[in-house]
Length: 352
Ligand SMILES: NC(=O)c1ccc[n+]([C@@H]2O[C@H](COP(=O)([O-])OP(=O)(O)OC[C@H]3O[C@@H](n4cnc5c(N)ncnc54)[C@H](O)[C@@H]3O)[C@@H](O)[C@H]2O)c1
Ligand SMILES: [Zn+2]
Image 1: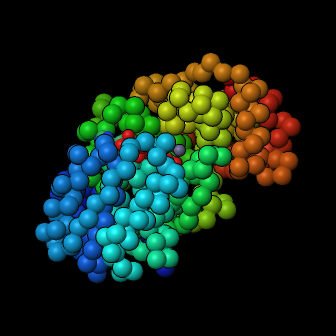
Image 2: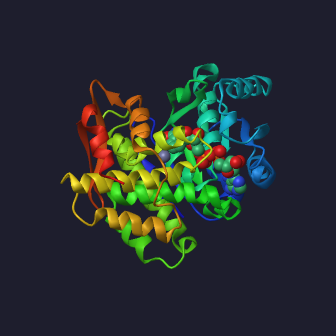
Image 3: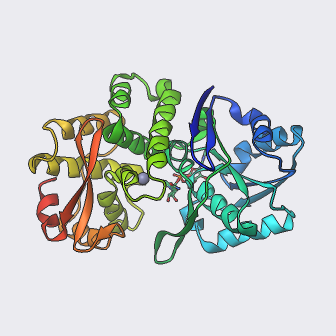
């Protein structure tokens, strides 16, 4: 069992262990005095893991209810969140009771948000079941949902009481979503960890290093959110590759590259450009390309870079007439570089 503790007023533990799903009730019992629990899950994850989680919770004395919503990002709406809140009320959860989010980032973000606003906030536990949610979304306390105007436009900061990560759940995860997670894993290596880069470079098989990878990524995310909970500074580093990735996803109507794949291409392009502009040590982009190829993520893109830059102008992270670009100096070191929007097209044109 590996344990990471996020410090702070409402600090919490993250426990990583193969098979922990079957014992989740024991750990949740230690972390809360709740008597009722509502498990929130989606239509793909519930048939796989709900019974196991429910049984362990019941064995540890909880009265357990469940609420299942249709899987997928298209469900990440206020309507779905409303459904969750209605379920909380119907199950008569009190201020002292608990929500368990069992699923990927869509489940965790919405169940966390419902917990943040039901009775002005009740506790919740994250049990992330996708690689992306295990290494990223389940830690850091960002919760919310999408609006028709854009992704993640509504939400709240609400920390979980506990995060339980079972690497075994990745066995059932479809390949596309696994690659999504690997894109983010590669991101962590370049923003903060040469050790993770070496691990990824040397491994024969991703599954052999999975647990160690999750641990290293979560520990980086812990460090970043401890230093900057509300994303004013260091947390921006987590957006490495994301400015371009969001533009790619939007240009492809969210039907093209998966998010993690777009992040991979985004990191590669921006790093090629920043090498040419002298911000990045030579050879860094080649290292990104090497890892993307090794883990079978795309390294090229048929797209009009001008059109993508136009989309970036509307990126919510834009500041005044400049944009904050997250750049890698080399493997394991990254920084935020303010850049004038007028120069952006020229910059990204160098990245192709
Ligand atoms: N809160 C944050 O800090 C943060 C950070 C990054 C991303 N996110 C959010 O996370 C979401 C993406 O997360 P995601 O990729 O986990 O999406 P997701 O929750 O939709 O899961 C992806 C798919 O895998 C299925 N699935 C989940 N676990 C499974 C398992 N073990 N076996 C088989 N199928 C399984 C799901 O039903 C879904 O179809 C986005 O909405 C994004 O905005 C949030
Ligand atoms: Zn991402």
